[in-house]
Image (tube, rainbow, N blue to C red; front, side, top):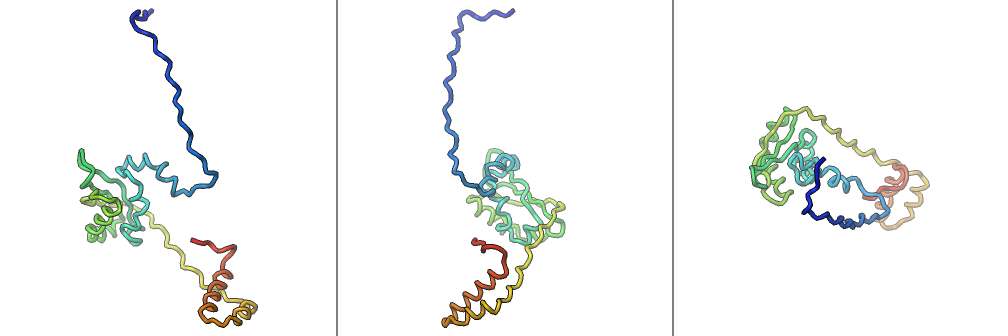
Amino acid sequence: MARKPENVAPRAPKAPQTTTPPQRSGRARAVADLVPAIGGQAFRNFGFTQSVLVERWEEVVGAQYARHSRPESLSFPRGEKANGNLKVAVTGALAPMLRHVEPQVIERVNRLLGYAAVARLTLRHADIEARPRAAPPAPPAELTPETRSTLRDIADPDLRASLESLARALSGSKGPPIVR
């Protein structure tokens, strides 16, 4: 049986930590607001201290390249946080084209991050499922005779054209219009 040293004073109990929980607003939050908090550690594991590069990759390289590429990791020389190497997964056919626009990609990434974070790109061939393109908008629906008769009474041609455009948009949709 081990004996307790006699010259050691007993420890004082720890004071309870008083941290207030974050205030709840009672409203739903957008998923885009939650992604940095949830995915933060995963992004840091791959060298992305900020998730902004992954989220806004299409703005950096354009829609055509974004469908066939994605950033994988950002690594820096030991002890530095600048002049890093951005590893990008890209489909085989697009790699030479992306190599030609490499200086522009590096410039846009650095502009997005706010400092000279990237000095070079490393391309890795990968099978990336291309995201489907957005479907083209449906042609505007034809107006009913009743709607046309109400629009005919408007004297101002610009106002009539605007109201007619609005009526076509509303007749072709289901439910209230979505304001963006």
